[in-house]
Length: 277
Image (cartoon, rainbow, N blue to C red):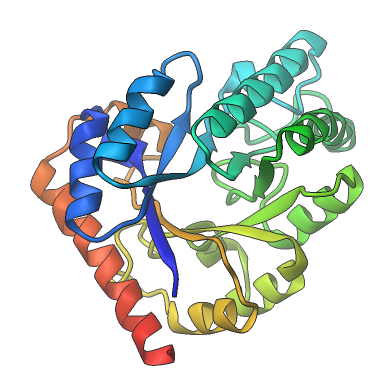
C-alpha cells in the first residue's frame, strides 16, 4: 500500500552504501538523502541506488545560518535561494520528487529584526525557489519545526498560511509526526486541515526514536492517510537525543542500534497498515 524510506543522514557518518544495504535488508523501497549538492556524487549515487534497487524518495534540505531564507541580510537570502535551486537540481538528477524546505534555519529561535519582516522575507524567497522547482517538476514541501528548533513556522496551521501566501502551484506541506507530537492538539485534525497540500510524511515517535518505542498513536494518522489516498512515501526520521538534529549527521553510531531502529520502524508501521487493509 505504501512505500517506505528513511533519511540517510540519521545514520551518522557511515557510508551511503552501508545505509542502502540496511534499508534493502529490512524491506524499504527508498532513501531520503541530505541536501548537500556539492558533496554528492550523482553518478556514483545512481549506481548504488540501482545496485540495491532503491529509489531516492526525496531530498532533505539542510538549513544552516548561511541558508536562511528569512534572513534580514539580502546576501544570505540570495545564497539560501540558490541553495534551494541547487538542491532542486539534485532532486531532479536523482529522480526524487520532493525537496523539504524549512523557511528559516534550524536553531533560529528569535528574529534578527521582527517576525513580520522575516516572514515576508521567507515568503519571497520560497516563492522564487518554488517557481524554479515548478519548472523542474520538483515539489517543495514546507516543514513546520517545533518551537525548540525554530520560531517562524511551528505548526501545520502556520505552514498552511505560509504556503497560501507564497501561492505557487505545486508547493506542498510535509507532516512530521515528531514535531506534531509537540505542537498539534490533534494530529489527524491538523493533517485534515492541510490535506490538499500534503506531499510528504516523516515518522518518528514522540521521543524521536523509532516508531513504536514512545507514546505516539500512529494508527489514526495512517487511517487518515488511507482515507486521503496519500500516495507519497512514509519516511522514517528517528534521531539521537540532540538539540540540533543536524548534529546526528556527524555522529559515529553503533550499527546494531541503527539496525534495531530501522527494523522497528518499518515493522511497526507495516503492522498498523495491515490492520487497515
